[in-house]
Image (cartoon, rainbow, N blue to C red; front, side):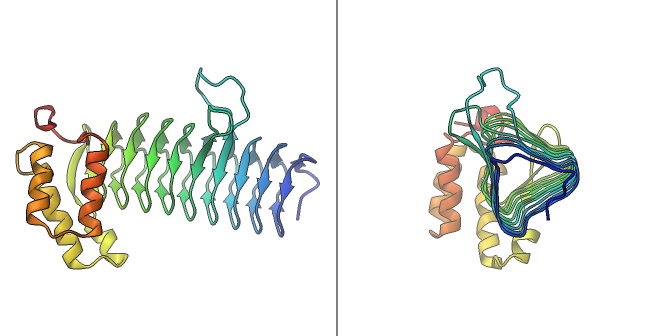
Length: 262
């Protein structure tokens, strides 16, 4: 159902069983998958590529022009996966680079009044709380929870299965499976409750906790903490994902005192 009071550009491509409510706006160069709902006053701007079974609520703007002086009007994209919910007054900026994308992955839930900047990639199954601000060029891996009013500064990365507590400001790299809280950001333990509810075993969670005791609570450098992890914890995909994340980010992770970073 497409309301006659909505604006749908003739060049837009809509899938099957799409509902567009009165006063919604769908621009040219927009593609919408099957079974989506576009609520009143929501706007899908040029460059939107939306999957199936998505719901875009009142006042949300998808693929808004980037708020970056480097953007020169090139045609760029904002890709939304399947089963994504975008609540009221969310703003998602498309990429500043021709042909490239801001990405909100499958099964993500973006709550009201959040802002997601250009070229950010949320890989999937994320919960983005009310009023969260994510700057440009960030990366949020699978199954992350960003609690209300948390902030990710430009070029920050958050590893999978992390919980960022409400109001926390992140400027840097958050390794997987941890809870980060407070300002300045501090290590608050392992995200055990959420992981256990989603099938992680007690042995896996114990290995994660042991790894981060070396990283955050031993008083040694990150470099030496990684060597201890390799010596003390049996190889596994989980252990290796922690090591790989930290090494791929040059040992620079949040909540580490400066003199322990090397």
